[in-house]
Length: 142
Image 1 (tube, rainbow, N blue to C red):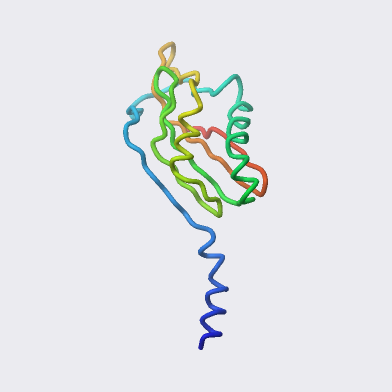
Image 2: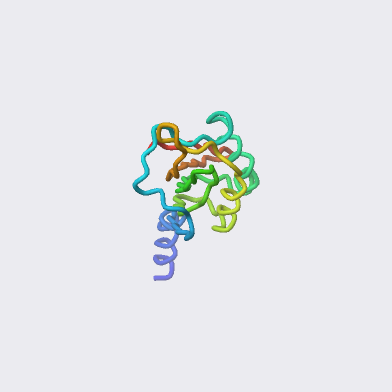
């Protein structure tokens, strides 16, 4: 019986390794009801977003070589300041929630979304995909 339970536990390990974790954060400005004719931009191009997340996540990737996705919901206010409203982590990567929040808080100012000529708050979704020693980041269209 012990051998059977042991084999069952080993067979179920991949199911437990790929987990999902979500966390919500309070205090972000409300971006609902806002329409934007242009999306916000971090840095001067989409390559800057990729470079930022690669640099900040490299120590985690080097230690874990994970597979999975991190989906960040970030409100970029009308002044271009980011605020992490929630995240969902899928897969084998392990990152502390406060570390994720610190990465977003450390981004500094974005070029805000615009509705015609007026800056508006915008709910951005950033997808970070982990595979081995690489992390790719992209801003998803809303």
